[in-house]
Image 1 (cartoon, rainbow, N blue to C red):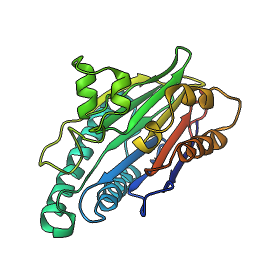
Image 2: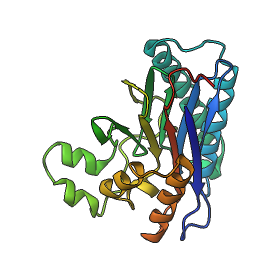
Image 3: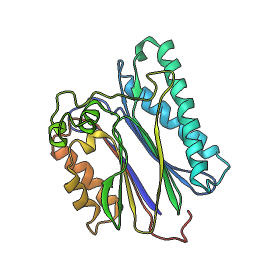
Length: 250
């Protein structure tokens, strides 16, 4: 497996409130995270950084090899619930951080499967022999309107309340998350990203980058460049993971 993580401030924002990374545990299993912080006075970056640092530490201390999807799902659910409560308490105790929260999309990636958890509108896409598709559901107002048939997918692109989230990490005592597992096979690619990428780069443009012959680094930089060329109004963050060898376990 090879991978790359990139984050970029974009062309408009004063600060980068996105965080993330790709981390290895002692068994060489990867945890990829993208978190897009929001709320409070510069508190978005507090929420996303606290989340990533907590999960990174827990992951690097994790002694289990994560042999089954069930083990990965339990780990993600328990650790995300824990950091949710920590964020909520921190925001209650620190006036400047009241109302802060963050999206999260995280993936435990082994050479057999990827277990993915998400809250909010940071996304995970999968490219495999069947094509390229979004595998997470946005927890947003406009996505709910699309799902219920009140507006079309095209309407959602320019909806005035596009940024309204129905779920975020750290804003309530308890949080619901989506967790599911997909098969991850040779040559498959996972893309995790914040909405600074998915709002600016169309699915067709994503496909053109994912399927070209460039290496992962070039693909990742192409995503950042394209999002900035399309306005770059938001921070842009992505993780790319490509499974290229069944015997590779690094």
